[in-house]
Length: 234
Image 1 (cartoon, rainbow, N blue to C red):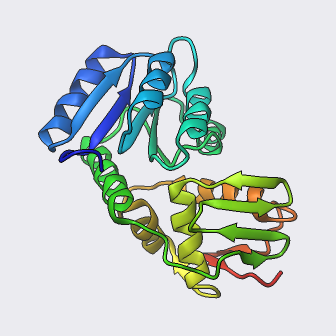
Image 2: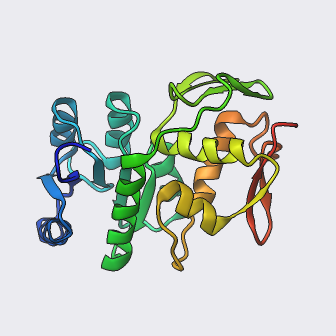
């Protein structure tokens, strides 16, 4: 991480909420930089390194989804937590599709928020992908975990830190039905009793990358009542 304290960029235009979030994050020992617009956020990310970005969806000027996409063009690995007043499933999927690693719907529980922040920071701090054969192949895909790249039917893509963590977990435990809670703990860094569709929507993202027919997955399989299983054999 950058410096002794984890450095968080908060992008939030509601000042009363920003002040509350900043206060609580600083109480947890984090260094917080706050900006009110997407344009300011992009300027910050271009000049500084952050350990986590907390990004509101509804921003003046450039919206949160577009900001997230542009951030990914500047830094594919920094964790991004999106905050949104939109509870529609399509909006959540849009956030993850834009490159976010997790999201919370306003109003959110402070304890849950801090749990997710600490989990994402903890995992991004120590995680390095364990070597898997360079050029891990399945179907028409080839994944390079150590260089955060993949070749797919859509062409070459850069992988985020979270995408690499999840793929590494699946590759090392190929054929196993991995429980949802275990995936959340291993990849996002927290286990929670709260209902979250982050994992399910993230699997949708991986299927769009790698499945020949995302609506009929053969590699990233749902195990009802348990979680998910990866198999490289279609």
